[in-house]
Length: 574
Image (cartoon, rainbow, N blue to C red):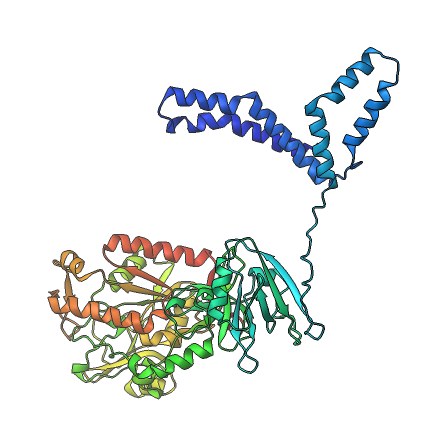
């Protein structure tokens, strides 16, 4: 026995000896504890363990029997010894060979030695016609997992054929069943006149081995050359509710944000996939990107949601987010948005996004962090706490404005003050992420202001409207989007009863207590944001308690800089 194997045995002995002490806190009586000590410390159990390990070691040597007839040899030896002069050793050996337990042991040895343990194929059926197509008889051992294949009735021949083989399933691993093979019998039952549903029922009721009689497909399958492809699901999917799926039992359910590994895209309508990191190799069916987009496009008019109601209150930190009121006849636009209508933006149908693992390197710029949330949710308070926690690590953009500089203000600190003509020129050149007009003055956040923060090796905290997020999702910024969500309206009434919201339109506006209308509007806005743009959010934090939410936010930031995350593959392969 090798040193490693010997060490394994000693380790097992030590484990057995230590078990009673480990179990002692969970044992109620001294009697039970004594029983455990006697059982796990007994020599008989240790002897069994030693025998088991010896046999296990011997089995690795692939032993072959020296002879197959030990019992007959013992009988011949006993007969020959009978003719020899009697001695103490001969008499002892004769007595030993005549004992029933020794004869039984030799008989068992011969039975084991003569047995063939190689798998035996079933015999070919005798009733095969000479003119019948070439037939393949396949026997698969069925366990609890499904077969991993779907069947259908051929529209032209009426035969039952294998429609698809699920990657990693039992049929795929066997390598014996292929797409296009025609089923003739299952466990001796003819299936030509049966519906696919009836055949599925036969398979479900079968126990142990299943025997298939198959006419092999003429079509030669080309080996798949697909590499590893991972996608992020941008919608929830339940195959049991999908009427279009060819086999609901073969479907794979998933939630928005799940990472899936694509196992096969051979079928243009139904891909095969599994959850990333799932140890089970068997794939399941999911709708393909094209098919999902096509069928959702039919429902697109019904999917158009009500545009976000602009608040008639100015949020804290207005200079950062430009949440202006439509009642003030403002224009609040994001870059490129002037070329698209709100209806088109709302009609975008999210399905899947191809992703790849990404981890920030020490010499890289930090990822842009985008904060999204409804007015009054406490987004700006969280951002302020982050800035205070480490002013050297976090930074915010300095907005542009066309209004006149006040005496206590410094250019480049509170605002970057520019002329109206220059501001409008920058708008035409798509230099603003967001901009708006208030009391005949423009306010906006420029792309260069974000670059300026990142260039100083800081994490840039950017607060924008959710429809702007998709324009920031570029290789340059690699944004991580955090949605700050309000708690239930009952919790809002409890936790915000003494809080205030800035409701005036003037920069010097006074803060006023929250009203029931504020709470209703906050909840409604959050629901619309989540429904319409939730697929763009990387993290959702419910701001029920400001301290708890800040701790979760800070932990998220720390992990963002050290952990591996899934990002769009286009960010790394542009």
